[in-house]
Length: 78
Image 1 (cartoon, rainbow, N blue to C red):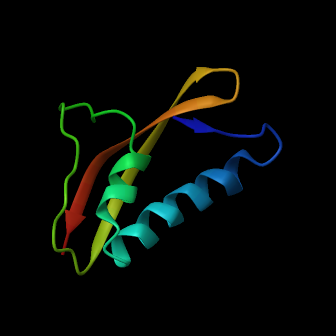
Image 2: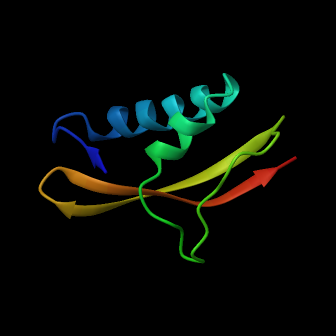
Image 3: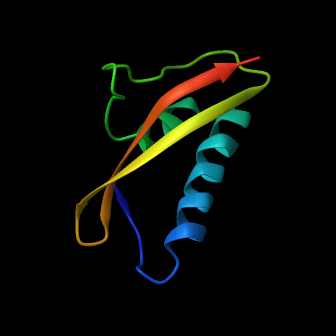
């Protein structure tokens, strides 16, 4: 779950995504995995992989108030 302030939603979501990518780049797979709170539309929760170049599609869904679930719908590894 992600909690956001209502004033800085865009920058906080960007920061969240950057934290996830930073965790991967530092081989902190457990931290990266803990940041994604639900499986994607296909029921997939992404696991540890050797990744050199990628694009990631995040999705944030409002739960209540300023709380959002976070998921990764797709990862494209190049």
